[in-house]
Length: 150
Image (cartoon, rainbow, N blue to C red; front, side, top):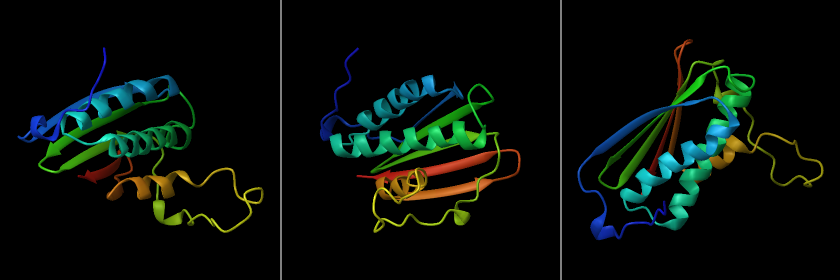
């Protein structure tokens, strides 16, 4: 099946929402990306925005698998995508270890690339790619909300 971006005039006009759960495995990343990309395309997002959205979701889901669950097959990732006007909201939920983004120091991008930490750029890029990023943890449920505007 080939997915093509819809022309802005054909983009979905009414609010729309879809939710799907995926196994917490790296093999699920492509399916999660397809799910989100299809909705973003139907909403009329253009190619660079689609790329940014898909990369942010991929990075966030990879972090859920690696850090919240501590590995594969230890939980699921629930993905809700909603479109309202010029805005796409993606909510990712997991039941892994809570995450506090305020304890993650910003990366030092001025350091020599060979001196930098191997990890730590994911959150930075998610925040750069998306217009809004918020985290909430109730102790039993972690929620990452990302918003992209046209």
